[in-house]
Length: 518
Image (spheres, rainbow, N blue to C red):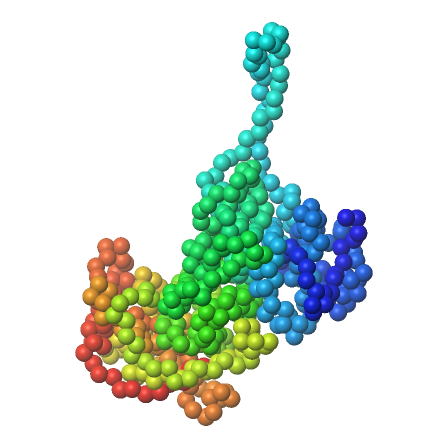
């Protein structure tokens, strides 16, 4: 194929086969589709003009005999917010129905390329005499044969992929999961993944087994017993509670990755959200589900691994401010941290009741970027006031002390589900907070009580309609004290406070009221 690559604008009823590219942009690139480059891309450009990663992907596509390749930067107008919103909502289907997806695992940016990224091998010449049979004439000719050797890694595909920048990016999470066939170019070798299994170069046969990272989740929500063009994500046969569990598992793994723009955290997972909505027949609300909202609210935050280029946990927490915390009740407001949810077990009962939930500012559909939301709960509550002086922190009661620790020194509770979701400044003036009880577990093996910490918001927002509104600033998890010899003195003190607060809340009868969170 000597024809220069060109942009093909497909018709509404046009059907064809294509390859999709999954890669890391690695920062802004001037080589994109916009109103100025549209006509040039349609006319065709020399292959040498393309950035190395895109150029390599085109060469692989041609070698596979496929006519079309889909590349986000060249198939979505990057200077048109409406076109971006529409195409981003369709991106799940692009990867789901692609003939295969090329994963440029070894390329850290669009300018890196991947075809020349090969792990170094060692070679030497081995001199030997081939064996001769009785019918052969006796010869004593020594011949030299080249021997090549590479370092062997157990589960090599997982080894190279998990350590790549590609595996740490938020957008590639969905692209990997939705692709029916994945051809990965790692620094060591090529890796092929499909419903039949995994093949790692130089092997030609696929081996059954779990693909890297998200295999357990993929096994839960997919069934691939056919040879159709796309993976058949058969979540229709799963029980509802298992489907919700699969969703939280997916979000937990997804939240360990990084995005250049936090506002993309919903669009980058929209493809899977649509699959789950088809099964659940539920309202999708900023990354959570209306019919399972009370459980979904109980997300806790954990530090991410910053070794792959992300922010440190301390830096992330400093940046979780009130300006970003809308809707504060959704995990998307704290995407700089990793998310987790309580273990579902027997004996869970909800103390709160969902009254209403609304999401605002969606573009294109319910799965893209949003500007805010409002959630109204009826729940048992307790007012607390935290007052900080320059030398002594005066707090009344164990629950108040524990709340202060969660808000001001969350690292002391790193081993529990209690966590802060927004930065709170405890000033010299008394700070009023509301504790609302959401869920209890009466299971004798692991009893517990989950409380949300709400802070009044002194702003006039259209969705508030003159009423007092709150933001979620922390999750407080109470459970009986258990000794752990690895705890520091501060952690042990916090755990004892947690135990005392748990027993106090068990005995108290709280008033009920209605609270609106934004």
